[in-house]
Amino acid sequence: MGIYNKILKPVFFKMDPEDVHNRITRLGKVMGSNFISRSFVKRLFYFQHNSLHTTVAGIKFSNPVGLAAGFDKNANLYNILPDVGFGFAELGSVTGEKCSGNPRPRLFRLPDDKSIIVNYGLYNKGCEVIYDKLKDVKFRIPIGISVAKTNSPDIKTTEEGIKDYRKAFVTMHSIGSYTTINLSCPNTSDGQTFGYPENLDPLLKTLSKEKHLKPVFLKVKPDMTNSQFSEIIDIVEKHDWVNGFIIGNLTMDRNGLKTPKEIIDKMSPKGGLSGLPTQQKSNNLIKFVHKNSDKLIIGCGGIFSGEDAYEKLKNGAVLVQLVTGLIFEGPSVISKINRELVDIIQKKGYSNVSEIGKD
Image 1 (spheres, rainbow, N blue to C red):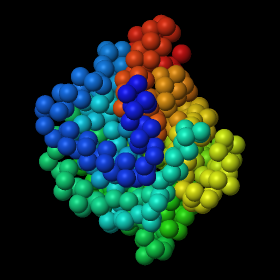
Image 2: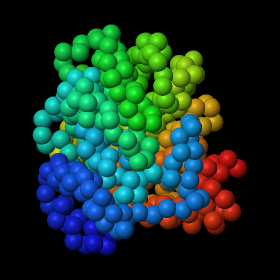
Image 3: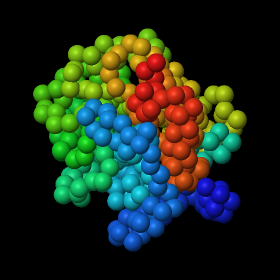
Image 4: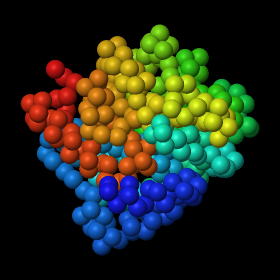
């Protein structure tokens, strides 16, 4: 972490964020392409401990820390992610059709807030291309595939949106260990999401007719009130094939930050915030959902330390995901979080990470 923070990060943070991301992705793809480079990365970053092993929805995880969707949009990094130390990873989001996303620039850093403004608009190569890339791959860690509605002005109605979701879901559902239905991307051209009850109900009714070969999660935004999410729970409880929620996605709330709102709006009037601004919103919603639903919860938002991960697990999550922590702290943050989790587990008298939140 020292080399990253003292040498690499100052250089990276002077460059365009998307250019840095693209270069890191290309490097990660190369490093993952052969055993020698993967072994080198593993020596640098990998950490494992028996107390971190857990089983969720019948899937075995070597540790509970995963890469959230949005970082590896076109599934280029699955070969290197296990050696960096992730216990699992979610690829995508993948849409029914190829999606060029929103115009650049569409990624902005807020260092004072440990946050990123994300306005990609679901950039990806589409479900057919990504399926062909992954259909014969044997993954070394559990891989989730996030699917979403194509960001296109041609999709004008709820029915057309559902048709697009269905195409992505049916195409990608055989890939990996689980499927996530991303209900909450805020960066689409119509601003419409399927995280609202009036849209979610017909979407789930349509997808309930498909074969469900593996666990399915719904990714939701962290901005909803408890009463709003109660409606979501009521709808989801009707569908046994939905195993749980990922809480949560980007926040649209730009208030209360160290960076003045007018500066943020000047950078990019559109786009959601990741990282620290989502942390407490996510924790609060995790706690509420855990008390009001038996569905599984994967916690996402503002995880930079073992204590951050522990807070989500204590509130009811069974796994956690991050992206922004990786950008601000570097790849060693994964082993740091896992080592700190082991320390917490031992200090609290647990024997395994799965016991957190059960007492």
